[in-house]
Image (cartoon, rainbow, N blue to C red; front, side, top):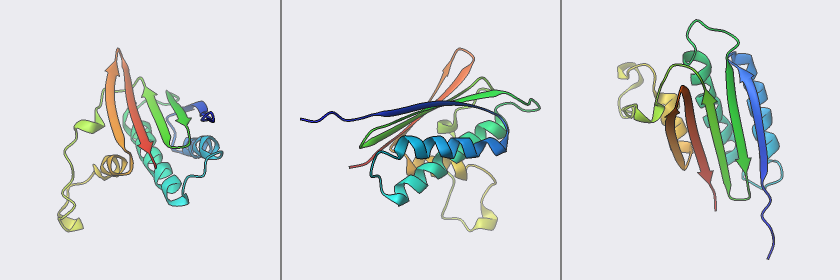
Length: 142
């Protein structure tokens, strides 16, 4: 019987788009010991970037240098991401699914990023803890 190793990393960024590079680097670091397929890793990076971008753009309207915390925990078959901010309360899981059957010019603007996150992750949960938004996303592979 072997022990399953777990990689953990917590990073703090501010609400600036150029901080996304640190998010991608942290994800790559926690996944590096595991042999996850390249396509899954790319999708996970996209989902994480979409979720973080939403926080950067919308959690702190008109405010700069606000903290966003990202906790990553990876094992051989599972990745857990917890994204936390003290911005405007927003539950991305409560948004209605976009109608992807409509032609692009007939679709309403927005909502596709959240849709992509939900499609790429195994589970996405939101909670408001006091004055903090907590988005927990997990991906399981077998």
